[in-house]
Length: 199
Image (cartoon, rainbow, N blue to C red; front, top):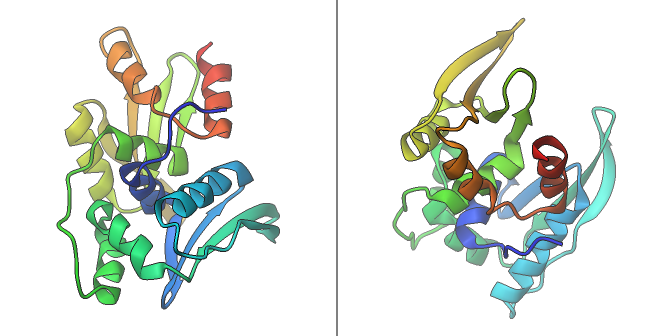
């Protein structure tokens, strides 16, 4: 079991990567692994004890894969208010529409970056190990790069699709810094991945 507890900055990064507001007053987070969503559910129940949340449900087939979902309807505004300082781009725009009282936006930090990576990142192995962040919109990746001071954001195209990636080569010059970052990883699937790749 992970020893790090979920925080609002971590959840803000995770939601930025994997969350959506598909219909009015409904936050949704989708994952192929159930454990991260269960952890988020437990965190919300603890942080907002007077609110009723619906547990994780699924899996449901989506493009041939089993996907789990965590939907937040009751307590929508409470959760969104706590996430608001950590949202970016279109998610911040959507949140702005639903909240009349809006907290100030905060700069990203290591907690946020790890949450984002656990939602939509990877580690690639080969001649070198790469810590990779992916997103269609490059703005968030540029912000991560400015915070970490490593890697470059590049555009990758495949047929008619495109994706921006920030790839950071893990080497002796940054191993300590990247190690500090990855020590904040929360979810069991990612911890197992790190154990396999970096052991």
